[in-house]
Length: 331
Ligand code: GDP
Ligand code: CA
Image (cartoon, rainbow, N blue to C red; front, top):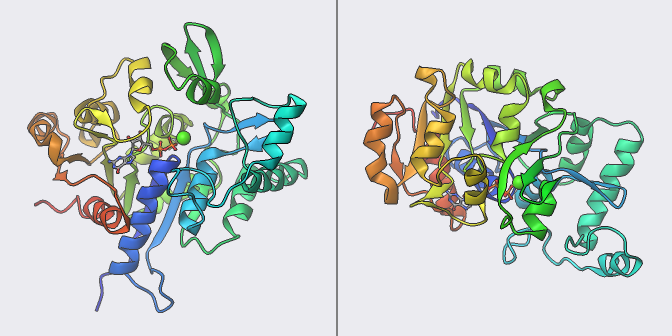
C-alpha cells in the first residue's frame, strides 16, 4: 500500500540542523505514517559535538541540546535558541561570584541539562550514553548519536591568538579575523558506537543545511566518518546553508572566510564534492535564488537540484526535507 519505509541518517549541527531534522521527521510522518502518529521510517541524527565545552565545571553540548529541545518542542522559537520560558537566576549569581564567562549566560533550565549531563559523565557514562539519556526524556521520534565519544572542542586561530570557538563566536560575534579551526584530539578520535553502522545501513544520508565549517566540518573530520559516507550504499544529499551569497542566519560566512572559502552555494557544494569524483555528495540542493549555479556544478559531476530552501515553518521545513529525500529522482 505504502512504499517501504527508509532508514534515514542526518548529519547536523544545532539550530539550523534541528530545524531541518524537525522537517525530516514531519516529512517521514506524512509519507510513512505508523499507527501511533509517528513514522515507520528510521531516522538517526549524527550530532556535532565540536561545539562542546567545559564551563564552571559543567559540560555543555550546545548542538546536542538544540536538537533535543527542537525535537521535543520545548525550544524558544522567538529567540531562536535555548529553552522556552527560560530564566537566568543562577547566571546572575554566577556573574556576582565572578564565575564563568560574563558574556556567556547559562539559563536555569539549560543548567538542569548541564548538571544532569556532567553528573552522568562523572559517574563514568560515555558521551553516547549521556546523549541517549538526555534524548529519552521526550519522545523525539529520532535516534540521536553524538559523532564521537571523544572530547574534540573547537579552537579558533585568530589575530589575537588561539581561543575556544565559543569565545570567538559568542564574545567576539565572529568579528575577530580568524585563520582556521582546530579540533585537538580529533585525529585520535573514533566515530561513536553505532555511527559507522547506521551509515552503512542507510537508504539515504542527508547533510543538514548546517554550518559547513564548524558544524558538519567536525563530524566529517572524525576519522572514518567521511569514508563511511563515501562508501554508504544509499544516496547522499546535501542542502545548502548559503542562499544568494549569504548564510540565512548566523555568521557562517566568517567561518567560511577563515578557511578561505567564499560564502556561495557552489563553493560549499564543491567543498563537500561529488561522490562520483571522490567527494561526499550525490546531490546538492541549492536555492531558487542560486539557480544559475546549477549548470556549473553539474558540469563538475555534482547534480544540483534547485528547490525552495527557506525553512520558515513546519510545512516549509517538511517540504525541504521531502525535496532532499527525493533528490535522487531526476526531475
Ligand atoms: P548552529 O550549530 O546552531 O550554528 O546551527 P547549524 O550549524 O546547524 O546551522 C546554522 C546554519 O543554518 C546557518 O549558518 C544558516 O546558513 C543555516 N540555515 C538557517 N536557517 C536556514 C534555512 O531556513 N534554510 C537554509 N537552507 N539554511 C538555513
Ligand atoms: Ca553549532
